[in-house]
Amino acid sequence: MVLVTGGTGLVGSHLLLKLTTDNIPVRALYRSADKLSQVKKVFGYYSNEATSLFNKIEWIKGDILDIPFLENAMTSITHVYHCAAFISFDPSDFKKLERINREGTANIVNICIDAGVEKLCHVSTIGTIGRTLNGEAANEETEWTRQNANPYAITKHLAEMEVWRGAQENLNVVIVNPGVILGPGFWNSGSGSFFKTASKGYSYYPPGGSGFISVLDVVSIMITLMNSGIHSERYILVSENLTYKEILHKISLAMEKRPPTKALKFWQLNIGRIFDKLKTIFTSGTRTITKNTIYGLKHPSTFDNSKIKQVIQTNFEPIDKQVVFSSKLFIAEHS
Image 1 (spheres, helix red, strand yellow):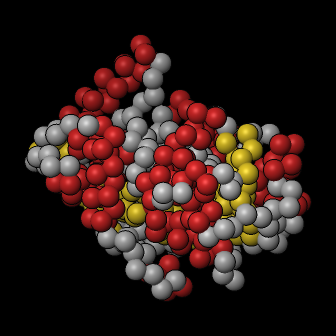
Image 2 (cartoon, rainbow, N blue to C red):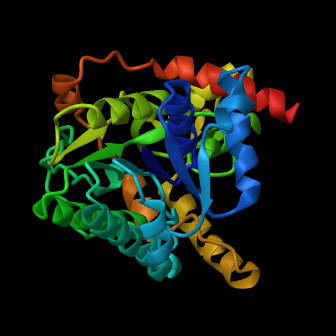
C-alpha cells in the first residue's frame, strides 16, 4: 500500500487521482475534514467517477508531528509520497515552518526506516537549488547557500538534509524540486494567485520570473521515479523558464482579460513592503513582501531540467495547455 502525506494539497490531490485511477491501494493523511471536499472537486475536474475514486482512498486524520499517529499510519505501507509542507515566506513564521517542514520530515524518515518502507519520494522546491553567478541555468549541483534565502526555502533545505540522512541509513529516497506548479482548484494559495491576479485585470506585473511546470507532469514524474530502480537522487522539475510578465500575459489572454503592461519598480516594491509589514501588525495577517522576496525578484534564476530528461523520456505538457485548462475552470467557478 502507498501512503500520501499532504493529500489535500495541489500535488497531493492530483497524485491521489492518478493512483486511484490506476487502482493502486492508497492511504492518505489529512488534518481538516473541510479540505476533503477540495480533493473531490479536483477529482471532478478530470473524471465522471470522482466519488467512486475518492472512496477508494483510506483517509486517516492526523499530524506528521504526531509520532504515534504516524507509526500507525505507516502500517503495511511500502511506498511513501511526502507532499505535506507548510508554506509561508513570512520570517515570523520560521519556527512553525521549521517544525512542520524539518521536524515533520524527520519523523517521516525515521518511521519509514523503522517500518521497512521500500522507498520515499520527498517533494521539495526549486527554492533549495542554488543561484548561479554567471547567469547560466542552475542545476542540481549548483551550490545552495542560506544567504538571501526565504524562510520557506531554508526549512525545505533542512528537510532535504533529513531525507539524505535517511538515505545514509539505507532508506531508498528520491527528491523532486518542482518549480512553480500550475494546476486548478487552489486559487487562494501558491500558483492559484496568478489566476486570481490575472482575473482582476491589473496593469502592473512584478519583475523577475521562475521555472514553471504543470501539476500533471509533477505527479507523472514522481510515480515514474518511485516505480524505477532510481534512488538517492534529486531532480529539478521545470518545463519552462518564464518571466512573471510572460506567465501573467498567458493567463490574462486565456481569461480574455487585458494583460499587464507596466513593470513594478523596485522602489514601489519597497514601499509596498513597508505597508505590508504595517498591515500585518494591525491585522495579524501574513507578510507577502519581504526583503528576501524583493531580492528574489531582482535576481531571478533559470533552471536546467536536463537531468530528469536524461532518465525519463517524457514530453512535458505545454504550459499554455495547463493555463487554458485551469483558466476555464477558474472562470466557471467565479462567474
